[in-house]
Length: 360
Image (cartoon, rainbow, N blue to C red; front, top):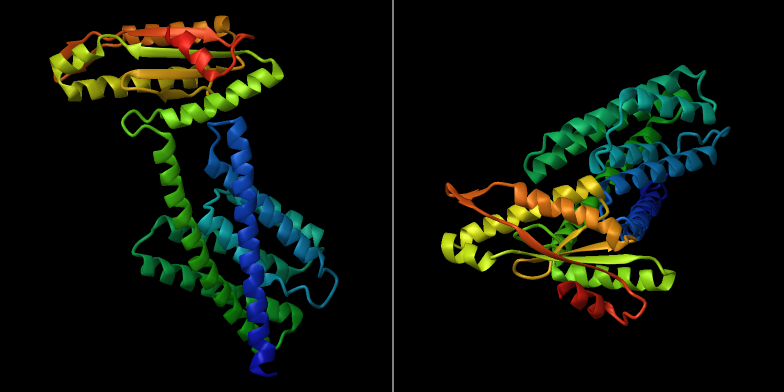
């Protein structure tokens, strides 16, 4: 066989297939997480990505394997199986217990009819070993180049072991095995570089998104996030004729705190009040968010709440702040809040009408 027949065409085809699989994964997760975040602002995005990744890879592996079951080509998707477990273990860092993985593997072997083949059990054992080996090296990260060396050596060792099992099971030619091991190394290198770049970009985007939507001092949502979210909540409530309540509050005599105790004390009061209120919101309703809409002014959007229902939470917030002993540099500071609460009315033409009434 010529170089073009053995390497060039399969390599290029496999690279495009691999990049397509990864790109489709990011496309699906990005769109689904954005959709879920609109409905559930506090959703754990990383958990969503992990669950989607597990289901996505499981469907691809089972689908690919079923397409070659009962043929002499049952070995052709081994490198894809290696790619899938590395993606789940190293990049998604999915926590799977041994017994959970054992159930999945036995079910998979049942689907492709290999439960009675001893070499399939040996392959499965090596496969499980690869998963846990990738977890270990991911948890002990060093310099970027050292990480790549560790990643590559572990992949090479386990892929070689798995392809040796395939050699004996399907009586494959040593040259074929050699090329497949090289393909595996090639795939894993491409995946490392590509996903590392994607994750770096995602982290940068996440940081920019956080900076855009959150207040750096208090970690509450900022005015930009409030304006967007309240606009959506207002339109939703009007279109569906559902209740919507808005709470505005500010910290009493905050200028006096700054003038008497200094601006560091003022920052301490702001961060502490924010933390207390966010704790109360998580305990009462995790979907509720705190927004810092001014210097010492904060807002809470109670979507789906009547003013009577929201008042219970508002009273708990006010009482929690009043009962807390604020102390900065050994000096006690008496802190209370003043709140305005109003519900959307049929005569409200826009968001400003609601906001102005709550402010008054």
